[in-house]
Image (cartoon, rainbow, N blue to C red; front, side, top):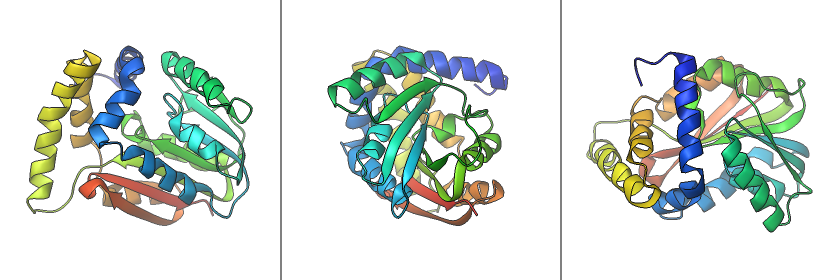
Length: 239
């Protein structure tokens, strides 16, 4: 991946997510022990509490983050955006089955050039997708642009562990070797789930993501670590 240009990497990631789309939800549940459900609910509450209006979910995948947003009483409607149409097909099917199609709209688009006007949403969220952005500063600035003043940008993501203790050494090793095995067993795609731990190794720590959000123009930035420090919810407010 290191030798690929930004556009080549984007095409690679898009094809990869298209391949694993039908097994994506199952793998998420297996790899997190089902904890991703609670993590998303917590992140959506933090995103919209005290606000009211439409929400945007970027890198929405099969739509689970968008559905949790739609169930919040503060949210009047949700747009879920993703660059993989195979994922969006599944999201639309789930919206119909969960009777949420009246509150959710799914569209193909690029997180680096959001097809929305300024100050449109009460929040912009991204769950387990921000580390796949080709140009993180640009994507964060776009999220800030489309959020209203006083609105929030929220990320739920696997982050690079910090510190020198035993856990920061052992958990990445577990992730590096067990995740490809699970991907091969369940999704029949070892390559995709070899990419996943590598993407985490090359991503930011929770503290570094704080700074990236600050550099994008957000304020009152904070984060909450989950999953023994492997996952973090980050939240920042637009001035």
